[in-house]
Length: 113
Length: 114
Image 1 (tube, chains in turn purple, brown):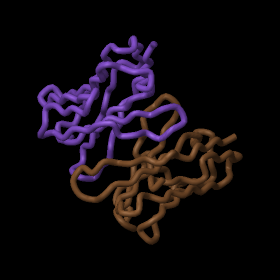
Image 2 (image 1 turned 30 degrees about the vertical axis):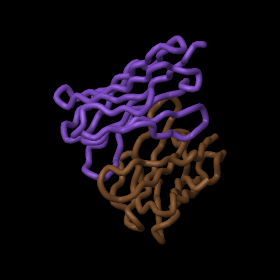
Image 3 (image 1 turned 90 degrees about the vertical axis):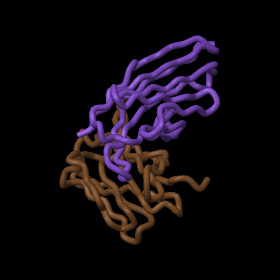
Image 4 (image 1 turned 180 degrees about the vertical axis):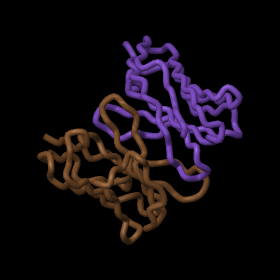
């Protein structure tokens, strides 16, 4: 089955700097890659997603890139702000339309003012 | 708030007791999912429904776990004879059917088995 590895497990950056989180997946059939942000005690919230027919997607300060050949995808946050501090999870769906997401282990991002 | 609703938010139970959680999905979503999240880990898939049909169950889901969605709306997850290893956050999510529709998660039910 699908396996998703996420790095780093913790990341600390200065406010205003960029943050990058990387994930690799094992199942070449995976075709959907969402990123979720989870604040302490709260629900995971979808912040951006990408499908396998697209190499890059941007939404304001957030971007995701996908390299299907290498089976890795990355989250980029620019101009970081204190409210970006949270745990971020990548995920991959290996079943067409079934949304059986396999999540990475999470990255705890801390933005230092 | 018309998002996914889960009850209760917290449940403390003694080992060996049965517990039941409820999930109310977003009303127009016909897919409903249960995930389990332990501290410091990402959510793990347990099972999912399309309308009232339970279409897939993870091998993680022992026979002590049962989920239902009798009328294709709300769902319940029951754990029988709870064990300390069942302590976790149980997350429900819902989505529209078709393609890769995004999952919307609820706030979860935190289960503590003492």
